Image (tube, rainbow, N blue to C red):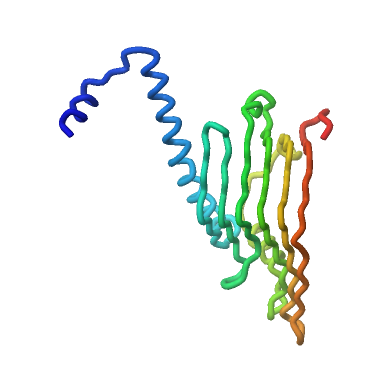
Length: 196
């Protein structure tokens, strides 16, 4: 143990190679360990603050070398005990070209087993309308640009998506289920003068 401690005390950035190794090690630590912790915390915090509903996430993984982010086990409730939106796994793979295009560029966006529920409760309130009302109470700064954000999505895939429409306010409750379904979209662009 003493030898290791002495080595760390004596170690200095003696060359550009040492600086590169130290930078790469720091980048790896931040990407693999710090970013997932921040993303998970922000999803849970911002959902409660903005949507007035506590989203939960099982796991977040980040690979700083492939610029990919995976969010697993996402659940957003509409009311206690019922789910509005969930998915098993969402994977996004960004590209460095985002910096040169000044646009969010994703090589791949894939969502596995997403679930969306449109639900009318016993008191005749609709979950999506309740969500929109809660969103309307949040103060947000107006965007002067007025358009969509610049984005290029090269490959978007939704696998085994399900939608449920439920009406609990009827004398005899109604439940419609649609899915599983798969949707694939290619080359979606909001960049002006670019076909997509």
